[in-house]
Image (cartoon, rainbow, N blue to C red; front, side, top):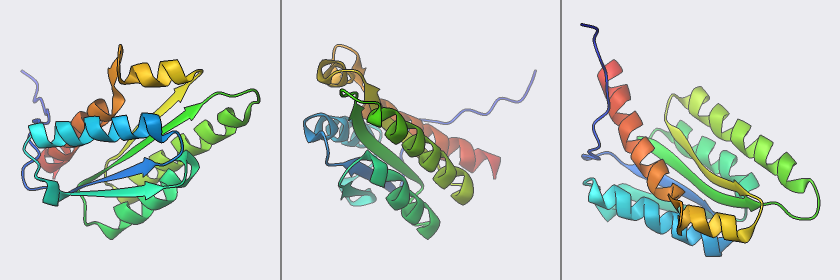
Length: 155
């Protein structure tokens, strides 16, 4: 039988940071609510969570990188919403945000979770922020807790 490593969904005493984009805050506040509710449901107290607001999704990676390098949080969740407009601007934002979040995680060894919606319409974004499709903030929080616990087992 192979050895299996799986992360438990218990926040324990770990600290979490959530970096949230203020742009499209109708959506991102719902993502934040989903993430906070999930962290609480899995044992985190409010004192274990730091929320940092940034102007837009493009600014998420810098703050996530700074928080990750400070090593004061076990995981960082990045929450944002980039909604396609009349131009291709969203494509440039999405690619750079994804690459920056990945780089912050790999450089620091701390899980930095991608909870950024990349939708064609506001309706799609709202559906993914607590509507018909669930809440991606909730999913990012679950992934953060699981990753923290997997990493503990690998040490």
